[in-house]
Image (cartoon, rainbow, N blue to C red):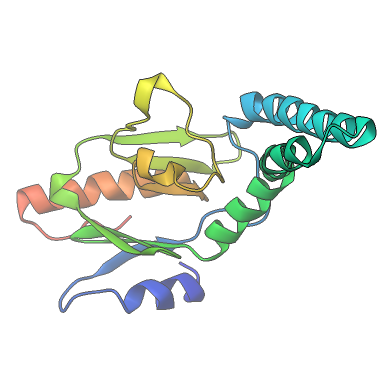
Length: 191
């Protein structure tokens, strides 16, 4: 536990609650799995939008068509570059905590608290360097779509997560151990 994460989560604890782990998501600009689709798509979108706008301005098609293309260019620029900075900004203001009773996620939108006793779907996705993401529930992306990281509003389709954390398997095992301890009534299990 680093002291910054511990301090941020400590203020969220209830009386008698014990902090077992605290951490933060990976910092800086990072790629997600959905970027394998989004990077080519965003380049095509932005390229076409800029081509459209350039063609309209060059041919003098009129102000309506010139104005019509501006939102598409802005959306394209956000998809190509802006979403990476937005995602990085969100993660830079996020802290995670695991207590003997619940999971705490403190971020720019407020604090989310999940009772350990109510968690049934916990999914670990781990990479070779022992970092990973722990999803705390099921994804509800409509129509089998892709939730685009860094796109405003996409978070509502994703379960709460401990995203891009160090030693993800160790934290996953701590969550499972704390759940077992709650079920057995034996108190917290500290790894």
